[in-house]
Length: 474
Image (cartoon, rainbow, N blue to C red; front, side, top):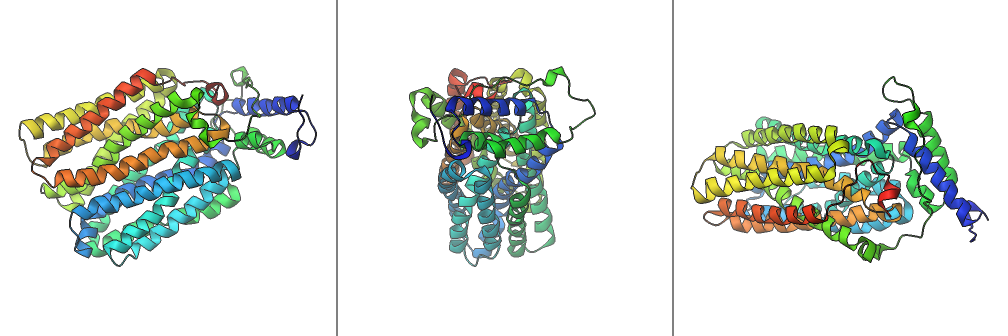
């Protein structure tokens, strides 16, 4: 039997593992409480403003290009710059989250993202805005994946799908608020000022970081893995003491769930590609890339395409908001049934619905030659609603499929495929849409990408419903 130092003194490793497992077993017993709501509120600002920022630049793109006298080809580079920064941020802060904790990574990334959003509002040229967006992306690329990994670690297996997906619906609320706020500002102020006000709103996460510093606890699962059982025990005690949401008292249904010994080896960043995890990693990366190539490619260009089709900028923003409402309805339906129907059912449903939208665009616009904003909007809306089922799911799903020692790291590295897709898609689509018949070819490209994603997930996707994180990590 081995011995250990540090947080465990000289207690044997087997005892440490048993104590850690017992703590997490207690944690699996805790239902949804006000403690969870506090964590969701703090972390939720990251999810909300990630989406807000993504759609804000799409809504304001026409105004930005007009302010600086830039051509439409710059749109793709401005969008791609932010996502290139996200790739760097996800990898860099991935190290921080495993070495120094989820809380430290969340606070640091929130400060960087929020402050640079304010700087972006003061940009004096399209080149300066591009540089600021690149640096801002470093913070944004870390904020959401570390928040999702952290929130997953607080929620018990039985209702994890429903609770985490409802939490992640804040991503859709961010899109809705960005669309409505952008439409309102563009209607009230000259375009050269409206987009600056929109970016200034995105500075809120810098203030959230102060709240998180004082009120956000570290993940008990991360603390147990690190060996700090006393800190983990204190946080789990606060969870147990917190008032349950609803009036029903705890019953036998809430009995402690057995959890395997969890004190394991230190984080090895290359373990993502070890034989035991390689297939999962490849499947997840394909799902990340195919989902976000389509989602971010179309979401960022749809307002501009609608304006080119004859819709006013404020009306284009409102039309984007109606798509977001549809997204919200479907995501809440998925949340209500996710722990019963399972993750595989909803991933496949999302891909199929998105393929229907892409095929409609190819047939109506590419083959039948139909024009006007209505057919573009309908095909685009169906496609976006489909991929917006998968977008919040993939964040939660990635965090479910890896052990605590690499959960945040795996989620962040997976999110770099989102960034890669977001770098490639705007540039590729910008070049494609500059050509005759480009919209029809855009939908054809989306259909091909979605078909690949559906085939890979249908073959290799793993069902995770109602299973503990420790069980799934084996």
